[in-house]
Length: 146
Image (tube, rainbow, N blue to C red; front, side, top):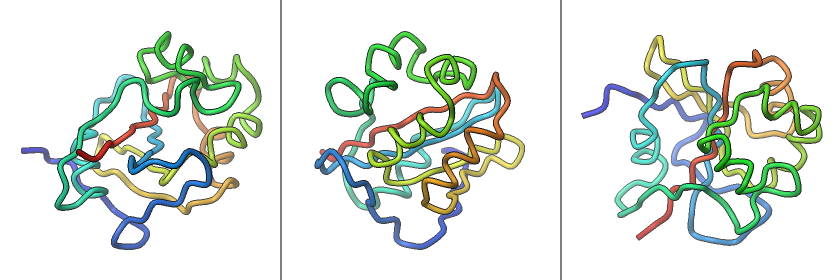
């Protein structure tokens, strides 16, 4: 059993994305370099009372816009560092492409074993990406029903 907890802004969690219709839930997670977390613990809170699984690589065929493609995700083990993302473009452009595909934005805190949901806004995503160190990484987890 996981020791990870989830702090949501509002319960129950709701899908919010604007692009890519599906029953899946897309969670953006930013993590500290070399930290590990239990993405299944997050999924069990986001999708209550349902059978679900994770899809790797996540997202629509082709990826999340022109920058964060499935090839890019696969080349980075589906957890690209901020250094790799910044090599693609600046944080604002990356956030603009990713945001419409996301249902929630989370920070993984390994010290407290907590996933903390942040305010759901483009500005929050830009700030998280801008403030992160180059060796921090992101993961977009697709929780698929069924």
